[in-house]
Image (cartoon, rainbow, N blue to C red; front, side):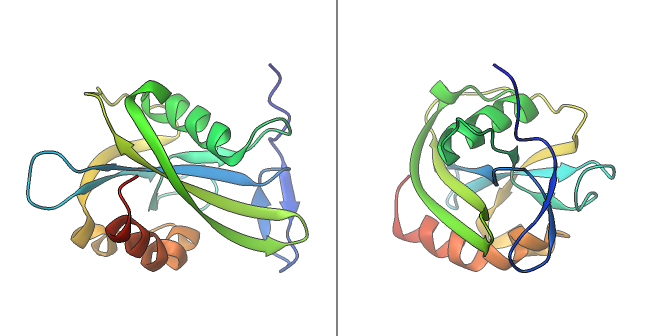
Length: 157
């Protein structure tokens, strides 16, 4: 299927964004093992939008995709995690108006995975929830992290 979502647009707030039909990312939490849940973060390559920052794997949605479908596709492309390895929970939408929004899809890891960083990533890392803000975060992710963290502690995606 053709990826028709790639392209720059301006939102209702006047910002320039990648994703003609909006964008979506997958925030995967691993609640197994240690005392504190871990989230998967991506150190974005410098050439990407807001590059050399940390955020969730994600990108432009295609016209035929829901936010969850786009987030799962992008996460698989960027990390190697198959959709079958996660259980999707809620969504947090950052609506910028003018038809553009970024949806963070919350998911829980339900199978063992081997991470495979692709060209859009310098690194993929499991980060304790309490340590996320110690990283240089993607500006959009930094703005939504407090709400995302609240959602993660309230729910069990």
